[in-house]
Each structure stands twice: as C-alpha cells, then as structure tokens.
Amino acid sequence: MKKALLLFLVLFNMLAFGQNTPKENIKYVKIAQKKCLKKTGYQIVFKELVSDSRCPDGVTCIWAGEASAIVSVYRDSKLIEDNTMVFSMKNIEENKKWFSKYLPKKQSKIKNVGVFPYPKQGVVVDKKDYYIKIGYIKYVATER
Image (cartoon, rainbow, N blue to C red; front, side):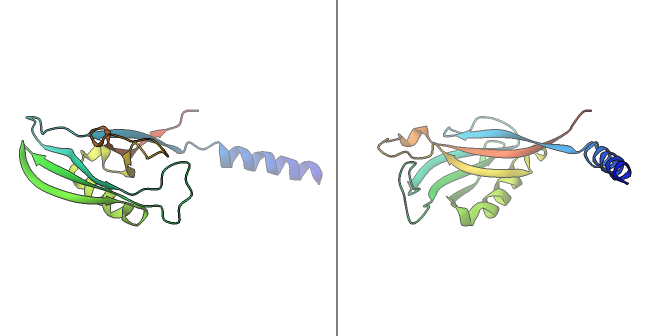
C-alpha cells in the first residue's frame, strides 16, 4: 500500500508540475521630462511634477502620501491632452487604464505605474530628475 501511495504521489507531481505554464515577464518604459519630438502616433510626455507628499524611505508616517504630475499626450506632434494625475494607492487602476489607452498594444497590459525617484529622508531631488516608470507584462512560455 505504501508503494502504491508513493507511486501515486510521484506521478501526480510529474503531471502537476511538468506543464508548460506562461511565465510573467515584466518590462519597463521610462517616461522622462522632455519636449514632444516630431514623431507619428501617440507620445506620452511627463511635463512636470506638481507635488510629492509621499512618505520618504527611513521615516514612519501615518499616511503613505501621493505624488501629482502633469502628463501630456501628443498625437503626430499635436497636443491631445494635458492630464494632472495623482499617483497613490487609491488611483492605481485609474492610472493604468489611462496609460494603456496611449501606449502601444504590446505595452498595454500594465502591471504598475509610479513616479521615481522615491523620496529619501534628508535627500533633496531636483524636480527635473523625476520620471514615470511603467511596468507592463510580456508573456513568455517557459521551456522544458
């Protein structure tokens, strides 16, 4: 009986874990502060950081805080939209949805969006050094 149970467990493990499953592969797009280039199609531009009240690393805060930025969208070098976006825990899904409208199809499965660099205690960051980082999912099948 013990041998039959052991054989069953070995066969079950081989069947359960031997499948080809898609592997989640996250790629990143960095949207820096720049002017609109003469390009065709949509272009997202991080215009400016309006405010950053996020809790710095190394500090204990009651509230996590948020960052606010103006993001512009151009199509064929013409301004389509200026959007003041709030980056916080409560706006994650709304921000993902907004960015996915303007990113190429292959980058539209957005996993995360954030403003960087994240504040650190005692470090002053120049507003021109901020950028938006978008993580999107690219599926790759695992190989045996």
